[in-house]
Length: 113
Image (cartoon, rainbow, N blue to C red; front, side, top):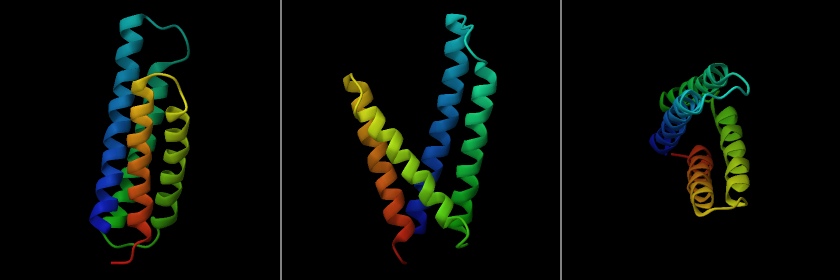
């Protein structure tokens, strides 16, 4: 199950980097004056690097990344619930997919192999 947890972490990290890129691209396209999109993207990339580090620690069989990885999945579940409670089919679909990924991550991290 370490491979599954590793895969979940990598999917989340890559998705977060893609979202960070979309924030910057959208800000340039719409000429946003609210906040600082590059700083926001940098924060998302830092979180993505942390999730990737946890994932590589899990793949290596270390025990230290289990609790932080589980907390990432809990927060992903909270974000998924928020999206699924929103309006629009896209938001609900993304929320459901994120919830399933977080559930698989929690299950994989606690399943003994």
